[in-house]
Image (cartoon, rainbow, N blue to C red; front, side, top):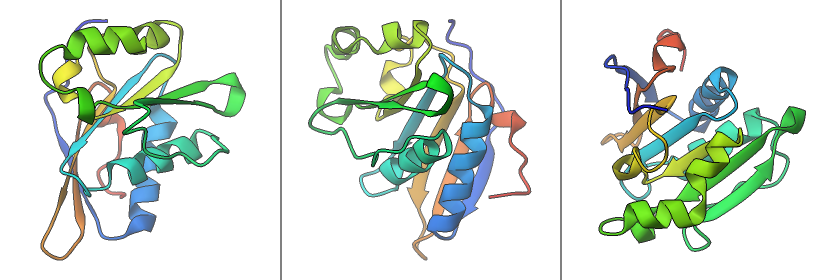
Length: 162
């Protein structure tokens, strides 16, 4: 799992929660076992909401909540798949690689889990590199979200749909 990243960025305007759910479903359709999804953006930008949309589209039945304090939540998904949702906000900075190793996130990828990480953009190498999606979220003045998608599978998403 190298650190290769797709250079092309796909930008989407998400005007409401329904469009965010559609984006989550589109991302989920492209995910393969062992994939890494990174969600970046300021507090309140919608990372956890998008994570929940991806989880729901993967068939997660449990409520997907922010793992800010637990750091990692694991969910059963459709077809015997596993979704690991992590939030590295509290462990950013020095020692991040060691903490990622302690949490076993790279190992879970190798075992075939889909690993979705909020605040993980500084830990790409520790997470095994080559994210399928890196989604940067920002908030516009009109409260819409701007989603900038890059990564190995980002070019597979049609840019004419939310």
